[in-house]
Image (tube, rainbow, N blue to C red; front, side, top):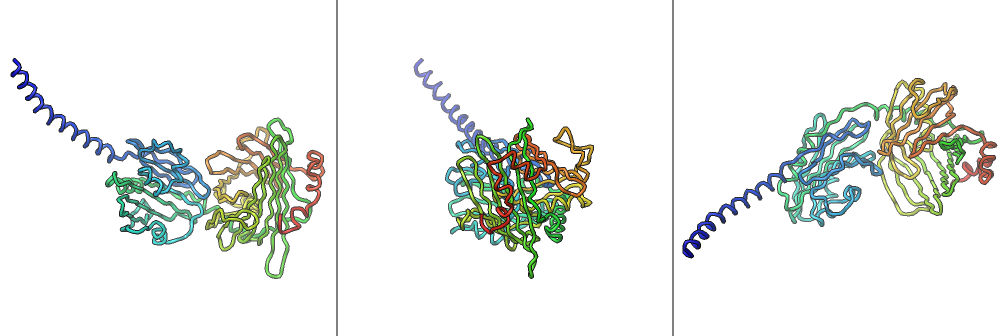
Length: 459
């Protein structure tokens, strides 16, 4: 009896052990197969750009499923095995060296608004470290050509990096990083991303380039004036006056060219004071300038200085501080403080919509969609302005926040009213110095002294 039991167990063990081994092999094979099967996300469109792309999704890949704005461009990211406690925002900014430390493979597409015009070789030089071998090539993505490189480090990880040019100076970068454990992954993912790129030029950016070029040729003389600055009262949804804006521009003719002096002031009164002053000095084509901005929110203050020369924008802390950013501007770039010159050209242009790159007072570049609105298509304002005989423009920031403004012009192409949607809705109505002084007596001295905005070269 005992002998029989031992024999039965022996036979079971001899049969079971190979079966368990085979099952283990099959499970390992299945895991490998699942990891190598790349499921791509649905095409993710980038608003008003004509571009869509797909990145890995599922089977351990985590992606946000949207393009995310980040100062000088938009990023679409997917990370393999992303359950490491990091936020999506942190992963978007994480470079290969950091992801290597946490053993994460990732794929990323970057749509650059203001990218330096460097060659592929220069880009590779920035990535190259000791011990790498590099293979390069070209791949077609529809009508686009992607220049790419495969970089294999001595430690094992692989990087696939590609770049392709888009109209009006835009660029698309594709980067796939593979850790040592994920053999063959980078090439597979990179090829799938390239295969799924779709681009159809909608002409909006090129139209913006043309309108900005026209504004540069005309200069700023038609919006500059020697009289008092232009004022707008800011009211909230209860029609309560909460602040005001003040803008002044003058053009001084010199022997060499026309010099522009512009100033802006923004003030919102409340439990938390919000105040910003800007001083702009440049040429009439606004392609060379120095723009100083100081902001105060509550007890916090911040000052920056922006300079542009030969299409290079440098952003520094005030007083010659540390360099915070450097960008090569596209042909559709325009500073916010003189955007009115472009908007007035848009009113007279035969184009219904354009995209331009707005350089904001924070030193951040944001694509902006500008559209003419017919009188029967007013949006965002239940009572359209009957005085808006000169036209109406809708201006939408394309940074994903959904901010927009609608500007009404009189028959002289002067802005008379703006409806602004920015978390809440506000209305800006044209006013004069007397009205502003009565509503905001604490700022009356500034309101009545234009030289405070235009007189000096320093804030």
